[in-house]
Image 1: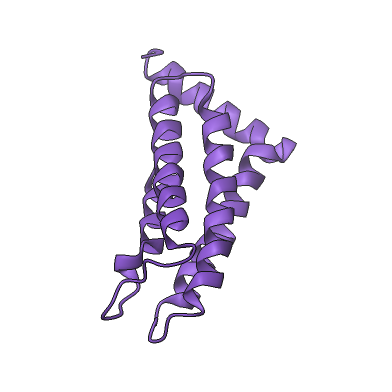
Image 2: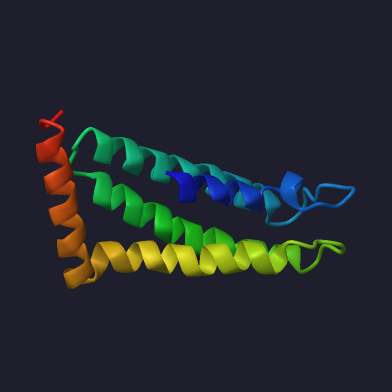
Amino acid sequence: MLFGTTFLWFMPSFLGVDHEPTDGVWPVIQILVVLTVLMFVAAGWAVYKLLPWWRAAAITGSVLGLVVSLLWWIAESSVSGVTNTATNLGVHLVGSPAVLAVLLVPGISRALNGALRASAASAGGR
């Protein structure tokens, strides 16, 4: 969930400039940011409640995160004075693929499943 909230940095109000761009692709970016955050929140809640669809929500959030990262990079390049470009892109273009790797690479995914099962067993299955 925490990683999902960092996608709020892609909102126009976080650009650090005097004016918020509203033209072109910015409304689409805002919608995708909200959807991305919601998917990561849903995934975190589903893990907590031991619901089986948490993995699909996290994968969807990661894919949406990659899309919004690339759209933001393109849109942001036309806005002068943005100082946090490298940080935003670094966090999200590394973090989203990392989440996907944890969820889709068999060896890593098995380790995560084992840790979640152990956690659920020690918590009494909630």
